Each structure stands twice: as structure tokens, then as C-alpha cells.
Length: 111
Length: 113
Image (cartoon, each protein chain N blue to C red):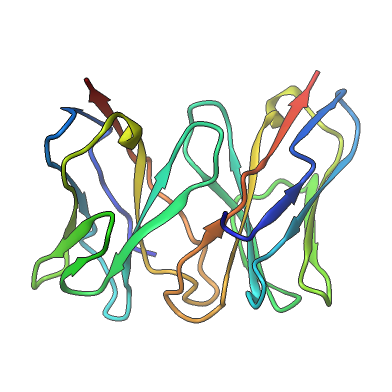
């Protein structure tokens, strides 16, 4: 499974756009990129998934360059409730490989 | 609501004891995953089952074991408990198809005293 690297933490203010980048240099051809959000004492929650280019849903956008060696989660106009840990995961349920999360990015949104 | 149910929500027990954590996956999901998360730590993959069979194994201790039953619910058994086993234990499920997202339960908080 592709190893991922994310910033440990980020700070932002309410109303700003936040971009969190994840590096995954050895991503496999068939791997998708999935982002999860985790609040304290809760299970991670699926945010968005993509394979290439750009994906957008009601919560976020995901930008994936042509080489797919990185991805950027974009959260538009964050609010205090977006304070959480964000994980990117490359590959999902691809057979007999451990599905291992990276360390995640702790986003703190200030008023 | 993810549709994944974990019981109990909280568990307090003493060192040396044995506990069983239970997970009911989302309706229709065939894969079940178990993760351990210690305080302020990341998610440590323990084990995955698919339709009753073990599919992938992480750094799961020999004192820990799991199984997935014919009705697809899963149990994680932790024995000879140590203080360091205190953590949140999460179960997640997915359809089992390649690249299908995981859906997590809200975890069982285990405290070993």
C-alpha cells in the first residue's frame, strides 16, 4: 500500500479556504485516493474519493495532478466545526494488503 | 450515521482479563476491519475479514484474535489485557469491492486498570 505523507498540523480562520496536500509517490495504477475526517472520540468519516483530475462534492474538492503522486483536499470557507484530523488513504480494500492510514493532518480553525 | 454498530461503547476492566468487542457492519458490506487508536495516536490496522475469511493482517498482538461470523458481524477478542491496551477500538466495513470506501463505527473505548 502506498505510503502517504501529510503535514502534521495546519491552522486557519473561519471563512478561509483550506488546502491539505498528501504525497503518495508510489501510488499503484489501480489505487484510488480517499480522504477521511475524524473528530475526537469518533470514527473517521468518508469525505471524498478520486482517481485523477478533480472531484467535487457538497463538502470538499479533491485535486489530483496527472502524475497522481500527490493529492490536495480543498475545504471551502471552513468553519469551527471543520476542526478535525484529516487522513488521506491510498488504495482501499485491494486484496490482501493492510489498509494503513498515515498520521493525518490536524486542522485547527480559529474564529 | 455510518450504519456500522459497535458494542459496547465503553469497557472498563482489569489487567489480565479478557474482553470481546462486537461489530455489526453496514447492511450489504462484506468486509470488516479492526483498528486500534491510542490517545492522540493514529489508526493502527489490526485485521481485516471478508465474507468470513481473514483477508489481511496488521501488527495484531498474539493476545488479540478476531473472527467474522456467517451473518457478517465480527468480534475482536482481547486477552491477558495490559495497561497499554487501553485505547479506542474502531470497526469499519466496506462492500469489499476494490477501492470501496470504509465506513467506521464510533468505536469502543477500552480502559484497562
